[in-house]
Picture 1 (tube, helix red, strand yellow):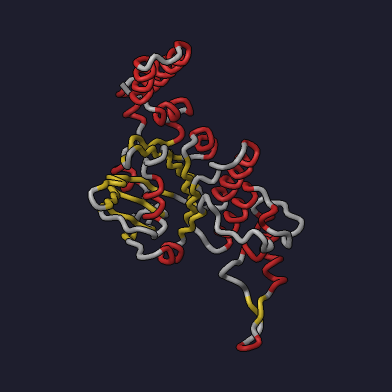
Picture 2: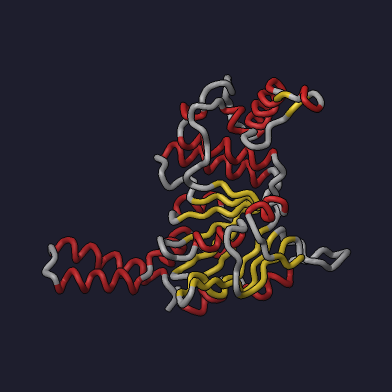
Length: 307
């Protein structure tokens, strides 16, 4: 694939933010959009000129290796940090969050890789942790345990999670099941945008598949999902759009129909880095077979990259 072909496939980021309009009101319909967003920490540029949009019933995958800027992007959208360049819009209204509570109030829920759960507490207690339902009045108020149990079971069932007993400690669930409980909780409490921070990073193949299935469930229920990952093989089956970050900058933004898994993987791998690795191994007198393998990988990757 040559450079012109690949460039033609990329989403025109400026046009993206202008095209999605309600035909009656002529107002933007993106749940969330970033336009030229950047973040500095002193002299360090953590994020620069990033543009993306999140829509109802779509999964936007943000891909990149460690240090690519994924965490900074999450923190800006989730209200942990404020951007210092560009514009963040919620339903067309420019916003700058002062706290995670502001983001939650705007309908943005974040499920982090290291889930904040209490392992020895029952599933239903974790589901309502910090937002417990009560019954009664004044000094006679008490937790409405049965209602919380019923709601937890119903919400999990609607997400396709079949748990017979919501009384069991959440620590007994697998990593994938705990992620799915967190997703169902976000849906129940009114999330419009769901950010998933590397939900499959520490999971095996089977459990990763479970989480990916529930990502699709959330999408089908109308949420706009932001799926943060470094694994294109997890992103491609569920993603509708793909934003690739490298050293804080966007190196590509694609609709699914315009890119293949091989091309996505090649964009992430980076031919220049592989070529440099092959050269270093050769200079260090690396094992001939290893060098040849890396050189073959360079050739294969370069054939998928622009130019």
